[in-house]
Length: 474
Image (cartoon, rainbow, N blue to C red; front, side):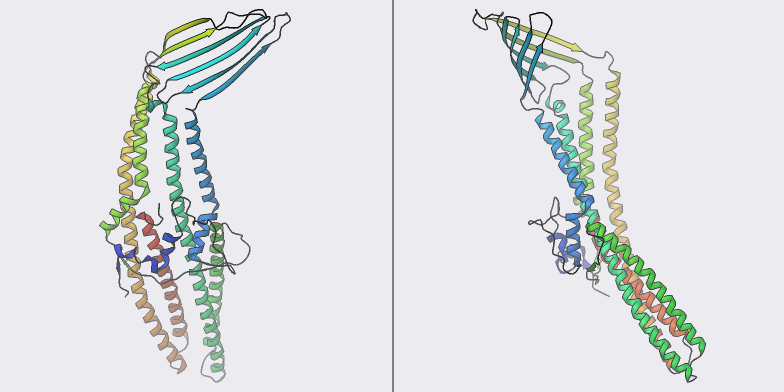
């Protein structure tokens, strides 16, 4: 039995085994190397490291996720631009049947502040018939209740920032899932390839056995039943090989789809299949998971956002009361014989208010936001318990596979002993080939099961790193 490695040492020694590339090739963000180049594929042969790197760069679903990130970033930019100075030109030209035609040209400079106060300056020139007027208007709107404060006025910006953060976390989880899928599929390809090799070896052995049995039959040292039995077993193994080849091709196509490469042509994946048992202490693994899993961070962030939305809903209950200040300087109008001069002015101060008297809809929205906030707080605890359960399940599964591997290793030793004994008896005419073929079948089955468990354990080491949140650097 191989020596087990403690969990805290396991991650330090990954550079000597298969998972080293996840620290080397996968960076935070898009998971690309600094040169942003795919590895060179020679003769359609890929290492597992190269397969993962290509998947992180070319996978179509991940590309769509990147586009979603770009869209979310643009939404944040758009919300920030709401507080830029806006220049709004305006023109008007009216033609009537009378001789007095009208036209006007103006431009409005508008600025919305982050506390809700807005102001504008609007110079304008207009002409009606022979009379031309000029004016400059200044306006200021100050919300006194609803609409005042950065929390309320930056709601759109905060919501877009939350959406961007959520998109980034989803992108990270997408990367994590893609790495696991690529590794699992690549090892599935290797598993079926190894099974094909085992079955071909068994077929060659059966063919030699059939040739040998034919010679023994001619000399009377074997019966026709021995020959029929061997030929039937050969057909069974050949049919099994056909089925395994179909599964192999299915996994190859699945891997090509993950890598977003052409379905045409052959593809070979290489990766070591030696596994190293890991001593996993549940408390240590849980502590690492609770510190690193992005789902915990997302649940806490959702709770914080729900609390902010509850405050916004509370603010919406307030009535609308706005203070409007206006100032306009203008001239009375002049014709070609007069000189323009802004010698007149007007001041406007108004207090405007409007609101539903009972505001039942706004109060109901606040109650719904309050419920959402309480649900979000519950979700934080639920997420924490779900992660603990995932870690425990993964560790228990790995322990079961470790025991299976030990048992199958002993079973393989026994099957080989049984095969040697059956072969000796058949060669010395002490028994027919029934026991021999049965022993060959059992050994082949045990080898297949042992290979499946060993590869499954290797995949589980990556899944363990995924459930504790250390598979990909952030």
